[in-house]
Image (cartoon, rainbow, N blue to C red; front, side):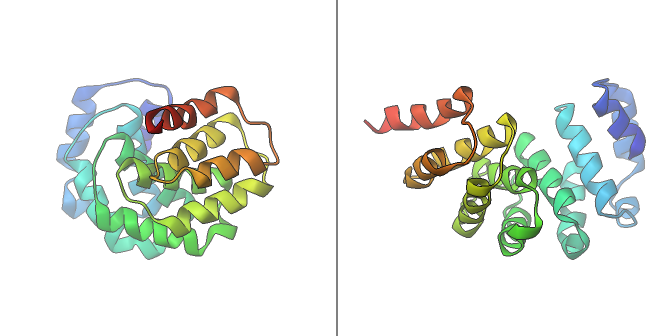
Length: 189
């Protein structure tokens, strides 16, 4: 998993190596992997935008081991699944429930990534979105986190959460972060 992660980190796409990796590490080998190995490998495939059956196997293993996942690993895996458009509703729902229940222990990035991933895959778990908003009201965040949070809340049928976050945030709202909210407002008029 370290080689695949390193390739993604430096943006080197070597399809033969990825295919060999996928073939070598079937479901049987993945059962021995820990959360970091599973999430880093999924992150690497997503970063390189490579669809591979190994992602389904990683999802299955992750669901079985979810109680051993740290919040960062869970958020990275959720992001990877959404980036690759791999719907695993039971896994993403379980991640959303765990993130919402432990929101005070998550970084703003982990909360926003998990929320973005879930909403991207049409899994709306309001306690997670509310927990993310509550934390982000108080925490200064960078442009990427702000964009994920506002985008996620802008995809809801009711824009009140997005508008409240923009209105109440204790940080400067990056102008580009508002594009999703403005688009949602325009579509409703």
